[in-house]
Length: 339
Image (cartoon, rainbow, N blue to C red; front, side):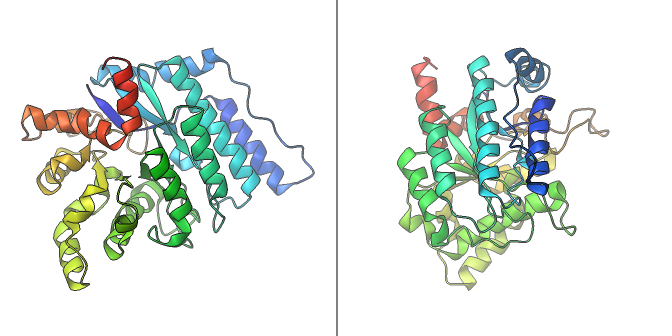
């Protein structure tokens, strides 16, 4: 079975974005009425998915995608908590509808209603709702709701513990995923995302978070940012700082395969243990279009993994077994369906 652990609803119907635009307009002008969530038909949802993510998933040999709201549109830098709650709920409800229409092909992961410097009570409540009521199997966690200014505490700080306690209780992982960049120094897709992936890993190196939460699990996307390429640097820094070897983190930290060339995937496969690599594509996301050197779509990542020098059993770990282990609620769902 081919499980893609990283997909976003980047093709949501236009009415959904119109709702967001109305939210932001009301923040700028409070005299405007509070907008209701968009009315979107099942037919509109089907059309937005069948000719996009579902079509590509099938054409490229995938079976199931963990599907979450569009990351760049989470816009956690918007400071109003009520707006964040309503937006996250609307986004997650739309994901639940996609899953309901295509239950064999998609399973949900949720957006959290984070705000810069805000509390986590709303995020915990939305996580519980999405897991308990909507059947989601994970969440996306933004370590920098400020959008590139890094005003939040490190992921190892006690600030985050209420969310971690809920994640442990519910037995769901978080994918580390920032949203829009509000800092002109950091291109959102080319710098901000990779910065966040790399920063999160170094934060885990510096503190003993997993001593307190031994079953807490994080997926660091985009191949782990710069981490695999600089594996020796992080091993050396851990030694220099008197920290445990970084290999110990890999009981709790996993990388996906959203790396868009063969050499990058080859490096990931050589440096990171096969138990810690989850297949993913982030199709129709940051890197769309065709690579002129190969004639293949950049985000057709299965072909890169197929070309790895791994045994068939190890490839099955990357394509299926690791995702089922990291996302146990997904595994339970598949077993219930006889898969």
